[in-house]
Amino acid sequence: MNNDIEWEQDMSSVTVRVPVKRSAAEKISLTVYSCFIKISTVDNSVSRTVDLSEPVRMDGYTWSYSNGEVVAKLLKTKVGIWSSLMPRDVTKSCLRELREHAIKELESFNEQVARKKTQRQNSMVKQSSEIRWQLEKEQREGLVQMKEKEKSDAIECILGPDTADSVTPK
Image (cartoon, rainbow, N blue to C red; front, top):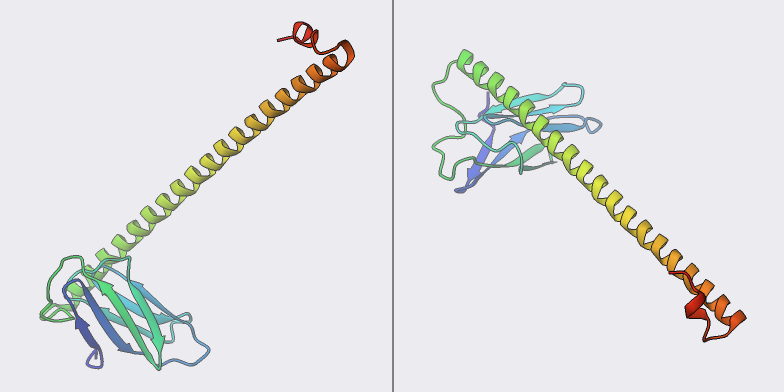
């Protein structure tokens, strides 16, 4: 079933090459779970699942599609060399349980990412508001100083230079 899959690895990553037949109009998507990857088209006319013998990170991966092949470079959660790409001697029910657990992990991971993104956005909005308020405060202070200078200049012009300091309100 998965005999057409090629793979290579180094200590920290594994690269998987999966042939995928599709029409030119279909868009391919790749989802990386902790213990498997899923390649599919938008309309699910093509769907391939590749179970992995060891866990991978659900972020930091790269992938591409070219000439009928998906190439995914995945980051290992533990540094080391795998003895095989796919698990051996695992029952279908065990694989199903592993996949269900991995799906829940990905959902939780995506929720955390979304929360962190929202927190960053809120922090940036707060920072920009504080900067804007500081700039507006500086502009108001500048206008007050300019008004006081204009008053002082007007008094000096009317009464003369010696009287301007004694008349200007402080």
